[in-house]
Image (cartoon, rainbow, N blue to C red; front, top):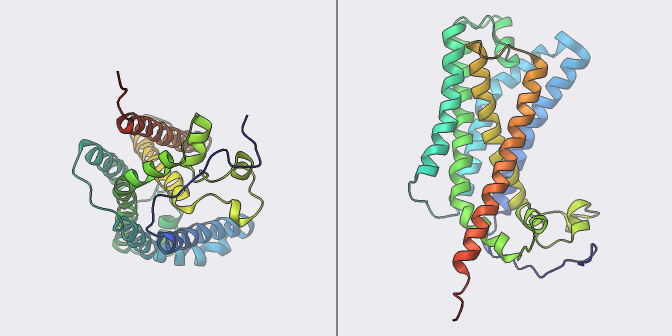
Length: 279
């Protein structure tokens, strides 16, 4: 039985190109977006209407933050070679674009004046007296910017997929648990270090953590947008509890599919690279 305090096998990184600066820049932008939204929601919960000025400023900043995130992901994608066009690439792009366009179409078809819009950042623009043209302009700019982020993450992931699979293969996982550990950046760690890091040296690799978070968020969020679009057509009745469940299940499904696909690809890669048996 392998020890829980020592790595069960040697691990040698196979990606000599450093992504540290690009990943840190990405996480800074991503953290800034999340921090602003979290502070906004927290103050709104505690102070009610006094949050409107902060929320209004965030609504102005969202397109800029989206562009910044998109440029960071694009910079990370450039570190790997372009990928050939394939049905997987086109299918992912169509799913992401389709979810955004379906949600927008459903909203505009049923609520062109946006009077029923529940998005707090569109709501604060309307309530602060901005014209519908200004609200539409900011909303479209935000949607385009974050749609570019989602598409950039998908295309960057496909570019980095061979290298990601190489790092998993290099960790020599012999079980699904060890595969999961390697896929989340813990190939060089023991099980205890992976589950309960006690210092910075025991943290998983940022490279793997980014893909583990970003890809499921992109597809889980897009799946939720398809659901929201269906709400407008009365396929589902609007409900905060139901929406919360759908968000959770969408993210869980996307995360599960991510690991299942990586597992299957890593198994195929291992089979293809295995030397033929000598008869």
